[in-house]
Image 1 (cartoon, rainbow over the protein chains, first blue to last red):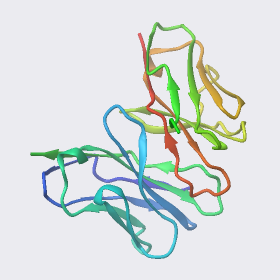
Image 2 (tube, one colour; image 1 turned 30 degrees about the horizontal axis):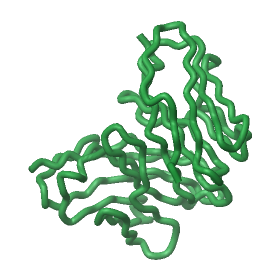
Image 3 (cartoon, rainbow over the protein chains, first blue to last red; image 1 turned 30 degrees about the vertical axis):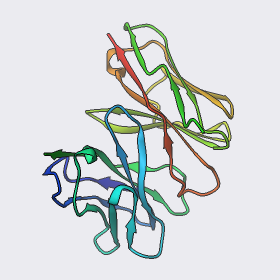
Image 4 (cartoon, rainbow over the protein chains, first blue to last red; image 1 turned 90 degrees about the vertical axis):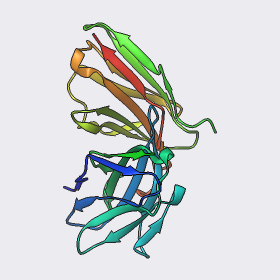
Length: 114
Length: 115
């Protein structure tokens, strides 16, 4: 069975600073990888996803993530954050050739300070 | 499209009462998911429907929980009887079917408080 680990439950950062949110997964087969964002009192929405091809994936709102197969990681980055990026971020995996059910990480709370 | 619609947005009830949460998926989406989110356990998948048929209900906590999808545009999650430990935010999500890498579109959630 696959699992997803988001090592940081909370990441505080100042506005305009760079940020990296970490995600590691374990799986015996290939996976599809996703990052979702949840703003306060809202549902999750997709930031970006990796299916195949280029390991660097660009998403909405200036976020990007890099797939590293050897390290089984899919870290999310943004070079300069805004106050409006304050939210909960979830990493998720789906097995290729498996069911359509994603496994979500526990989430990382990004807190951007002015 | 209006997105995934959930009702009610907030529900406060007393222990032992029946609670029914409702979801209208995005038109044309064949897959529907019910999740529960708590601080302690994070986001948990409760049940997954494909073409109105329950495919995986292994996440349903116990017999007090039941879910139905009578047609492609409506699903319910029922808790009977409710308990304080059921307090959580319940999300419904839908996804186009056909391939596993389609994103899920989440509703705004129902915040349930059981006193």
